[in-house]
Image (cartoon, rainbow, N blue to C red; front, side, top):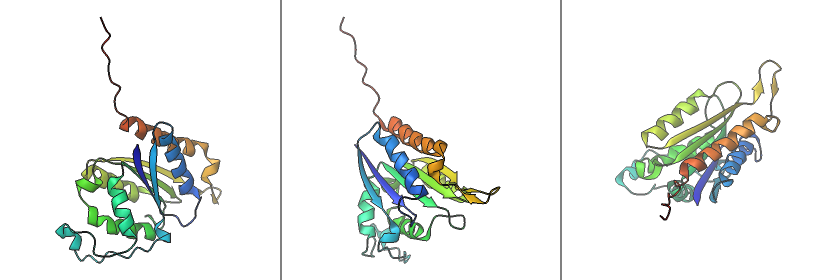
Length: 194
């Protein structure tokens, strides 16, 4: 069973990034049993990191809030889906606050060996998020699977709902299928009886 954590940065439940996340999870579910945990930072009580460095002593974060639910789920996860619209070229502020607090787990023991999926809905720019995740995933020996979907057409100046883009939904499912294949144990070779 794959342990999967989805971190939803959008305030819109069922919006573009949630829809893409659901398709990533569908791709995983086609080949694996999942234990899914979802967090919506905008609905949670998460204080800003105080940079007190208490976590650097090997102790837990000194702030007692909803991050105490996130830490064990994130640490145990095989797959972490990070889904966010882009605000001013970066993730939403509630999700950024959550990630700042993940500094308490910044080690290969908690970040290593995972598949990180980055689902982005953007209008103008997205590169900084992909670079950020590739740097973190690579630094801790994990894999990064980005999916950036431009949800705005500058020619018509209209928004494009992801539900109208079968190619994006297909890509999201393929990411899930790819991770499932990477995480599946190799088949056991059986020697034929002579």
